[in-house]
Amino acid sequence: MKTLIVCSKNSGKIAPFILDQAESLKAQGIEIEFFTVSSKGLRGYLKSRKGLLQIINDFQPNIIHAHYGLSGLLANLQRKIPVITTYHGSDINNKKVLKFSKIAIFLSKFNIFVSQKNIEIAKPKKNYDLIPCGIDFDIFKPLDKEKCRAKFGFTNDEKLVLFSSSFDNQVKNSELAHSAVNLLPNVKLIELKGYTREQVCELMNAADAVLMTSRTEGSPQFIKEAMACNCPIISVNVGDVESVIADTENCFVCAYNAEEIAENLQKIIIANTRTTGRNKVLNFDNKKVAKKIIDIYKKIISR
Image (cartoon, rainbow, N blue to C red; front, side, top):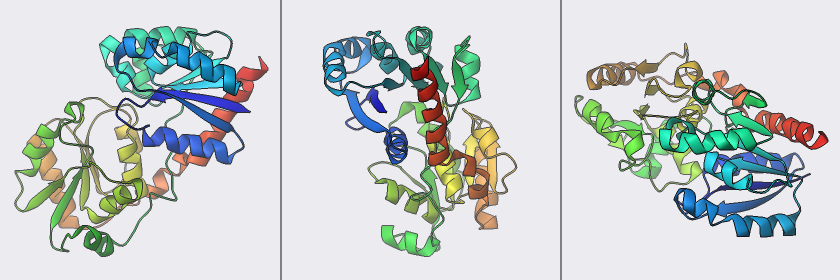
């Protein structure tokens, strides 16, 4: 089976969770080709139609799997090859983009949502499922804390909190994270920017806790990957975080309140123990997710 993945590359690279999913699909026998959109905005996507038609003609896919609503809209500008679209959160939570995502939902043969909250917002009527993106458990796993700290030059007595993204990403709301951490003495907030996947895992294992203060999310990989590393988590109630970390000791869901976040970070620092989060996210294994997606491909193609 040949699948053409249509997705954005306007940040300079394909999102890691899309690449991870593609690798899992390839491992189960799916032939994968990518068509990426480097231009931004609706106009940029629409300008890519000619290139998309060319790669469809050359690759002759059985199915197109688009990631994010605008990619789904672009993919559906042709009606020869069936399209499946996965919505990751920003394409549903952003009201300006949602209207275009709804067109993609209507035109796509099948729609995948990564969180229940996004389904409730989008209100699809048929041909959809809830399938969060999976985790690469070979990369994200518990490692020795002291060895991981040594790789980045951190000392064992430093109090480290890993932020979920770069500080300049407005959606991630680093202002709240800084406000909370600044209430605690001698705690360092680490910006997650410019690291490889393996280094992200090492940082999660080096940190005392990870922190997410995002304004919106779908099903954040950052949280699931931290769970896979048994790293304590502090997060606001966004996306599917509450259900993912539910009843996991040393993991807390907080209001958008710096004092509450700081109070729970202090609890984690005092406890100084890891979690059992990995056991609770085994259902997010990339291999299992890929199998579900392949089953959808087969159903759509057989129609």
